[in-house]
Length: 152
Picture (cartoon, rainbow, N blue to C red):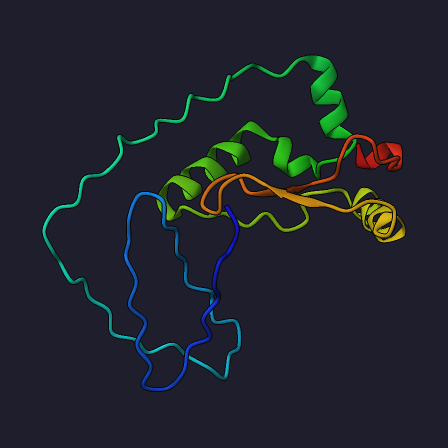
């Protein structure tokens, strides 16, 4: 459930590993404008190996928001993201590109407040990683920690 090894690319290097149902791998994004990634990849196939049955994650329960939840959202989220038309566009873009960026999602004052409270409380509790490396991996803080109300 944790990163076992991180490999920094090197010129003329070769990385070889088994891909199986419980080995997860990813490639970091190149963020520097002055650098690029040039790579060659391939697959070596061998005889089939017995695999455990695929784990099917149970679907998350869906529910419609209540008026109270919408009021709470309106106090935190920039109004344009609460518009049904904008939400539809966001969904279509996410389905097409498998990623989404929502600049200015939180109201500026709420974002600043959260950042300030996170900085102030970073020494009070130790955050831990929850979830597998490939899906819904989040950092959580134990419930016993006394964080400000806005961070609970």
